[in-house]
Amino acid sequence: MATNYFVDPQSSSALWVKKNKSDPRAEPINKNIASVPTAIWLSSIQESEFELTQKITNYIAQAEKQKTELMFVIYGLPNRDCSGQASADNSADKQKYKTWIDTLAANISDTKMTIILEPDALADISCLTEAQR
Image 1 (cartoon, helix red, strand yellow):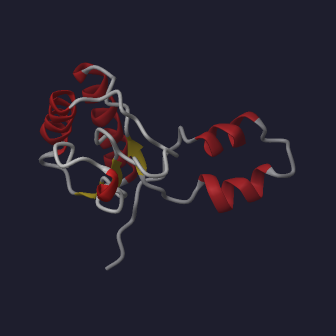
Image 2 (cartoon, helix red, strand yellow):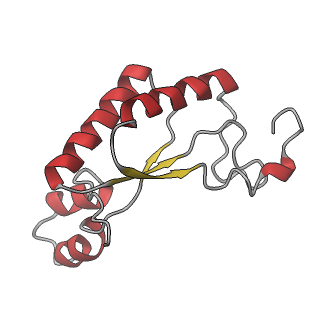
């Protein structure tokens, strides 16, 4: 059975459609982009535990209301993307990351969802020092 994934009503495309209803592009953008389920990227490990908890709780409530399943991309690993630097974020340390992951886990533990964990972490491991690995 196919999974019915969450459509974020606050995505940039959905907000654009709401703001530009009379634009002739609004209908195809809504149909082909804003109404299509996508993964929600969680990568702001600088936010407080309270902010993260609020965000997760809000997404879970919205998904329950839609009767859909969430798909999260967890993306906050320190030294991520060390080879390409396209999305590198070296501001996090191991303890902050652990706290962030623990907060995520505590808030999603009883919720059925799809998790994509650190999608480029293994691909970039070769440019990290042994201590960073």
